[in-house]
Image 1 (cartoon, rainbow over the protein chains, first blue to last red):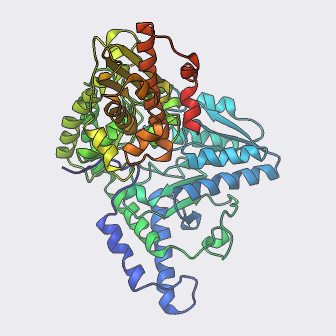
Image 2 (image 1 turned 45 degrees about the horizontal axis):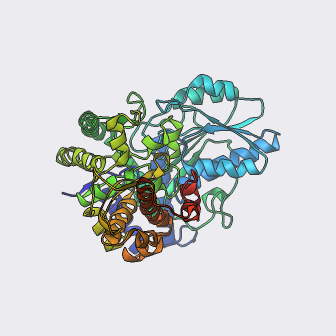
Image 3 (image 1 turned 90 degrees about the vertical axis):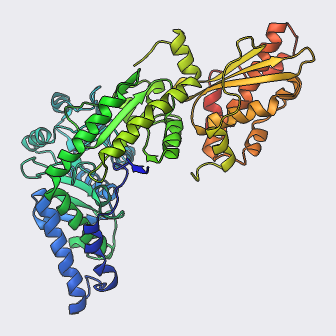
Length: 395
Length: 148
């Protein structure tokens, strides 16, 4: 049985998105910037897509800027707020320890340019505390950027409360909503969000397309210079087919959000319930504040990459925050941020499911994982020491 | 999976000589759980100094398990002195290569063998040139090789 359980990494393109985009590759291929009526059809499609995306977020279409994906949107939002702040002498940026690298690396670059960055603790449950944010805010804070939902452990942040606090303090608030868009209700007005990033391929659109929402009045800095596309804020001929697909996929996801969630949650909860029966396992992140589809667990005494390779042999696609899968010696910064010891973080498994998964597939995962964990533990000297009491159990 | 050669995947899927030797003549353990891999190697040595059996336990990624498995195969039937000559390069070649960021696993396998032989020498009271193992006691060994 083949089970794709890595939907937080990317998703299958939906039939709706594919059907929507195909005509813009083969028939309506004109450049939206061209004057003739043939190309104007592409311009109209862009406008319609902008209206659709805006409606899904409760934004104005003029507040939507199409990008190449979530990373570009994150980069542009953060750099824009930093440049704007610097002009007013504000050079302090607030974020969290477990953001996506598109955020963390952009902040690190700004830090080198002389900005000060405060990264908030996310505590053991993977949720930011409002009082921590309040305490971190300064007179010269130029931006608060806090992700909507974490990509590895799936914890959801108190976005509306953060938004209200930032609005009251007149500080721009950006959220990386890449893992939330299409899976959770987003209302940029009600949540007082000033900027928000989304990525199409996380909700069944193709890779290579995303959007930045920037509230009217936010001054954007260009990341890509060139033509006057996207009201002069993002140069480059628009990825019309991708944008049309993203709009169609987002609309579909938002229309079916309730039924998708109702389908996904029982599958996720079964995974949590059954895999938790493995001794010395741990669920990572608060279950109370959680996206529907993400399951992140650690199994003591084993290493994540071996687990993934064996799951692959069993037809199961998953991911891990172990060092060996991150390409460095350190395990995932997210797992370290929620306080896991290195040796436990190495044995992590992320299963991220979506509405295309079935309960049969969940049962296959449940039937497969415990045996692999036991097999790897049997050959692990760490497990041997844990069993003999020569090493204390950490979970 | 394209990350690893067929040989690596074979040794990962069907690791040779997994287990422990209760009456081992030498046991070596290298690596550290914080860094994500530990190898423990057991050797049985006859009166002629020939390694007659070797088993391993490994906590680590696919290449850590595969290099451990390959190393055990390469030293069984060899004398302990020959085992000391086993290089990480030879292990990598026998596995038809490893990705660059996984080369430290092969160094760990070489070190595990050397640690087991050192333990055998110590237990038997066989004298040796300490220079032979001077790189063994460094806590940070794993980090250094990882960064190469």
